[in-house]
Image (cartoon, rainbow, N blue to C red; front, side, top):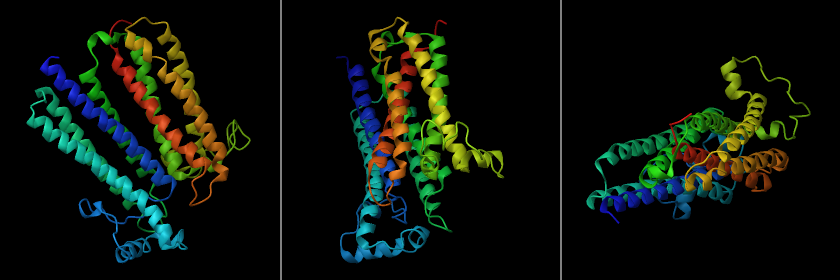
Length: 353
């Protein structure tokens, strides 16, 4: 194998490890949210926060800090130290995994620099990758801080959505960078028409994922735990209240629920129509082997979304049940759908109409 090609494959493998670790990190964020663990650690200590409390005195000190938060005083006032240890673990592990991703990036970067595997054109994307990772960490803390003051018992949904979207942006950027190093030009096809469909569906999915995060932040699944109607109506009442339109779009739970469902149906229809066009298009073997992915995953995503809504009536605070499994799998398939659309966007280049 040519030295340059070998270097590209090594760097791409490192980036794909980062993609996998980021998927795990976002999944851990979902677990942290579903277990109500996100506000258990009240400080952001980048270095000293790596280790959890190691003795009873340290545990009590952390518990006392948590007891000063609105979440404890207004919601979890009956928590014992054992209860606190459970939620502390998930938030600590979520942060530890983020630190591990940073370490893998830093050590890998140093090793590839030392071994001279980086080409000149790789440096700028790597710097952007580093900045995106740092920004994501900062946005994460801004999100947590929003739930530590006033009468907040959870983080602000808009900041949760921002944290989620930034994480997905980091995920997609890393994946795209790896594809540039792995996929050869003769494995791609040129079709501007299919690519325009791809871009439109991708933008719609980003909006859908944003509303999925708002659904999670507002716990909006429980406002209408019925299907196919929304609380016995196809178009529910009170879609708009006395707030401004913008505030309705980010705060009105029934409107958020309605938009999230509507976008899901629209995505399914558009991906079906697009897939029919994909199946009629000749192309590389790689294109033919992977063109069915978006349709298969969006169908699974819709099924899991319906299951999440229907099982939301069984939510028990502090208990991981069927709803939590459905919600977590729903989020995971949403990420996979996003990655498959990014994959198709890379494989389908601009070209003939």
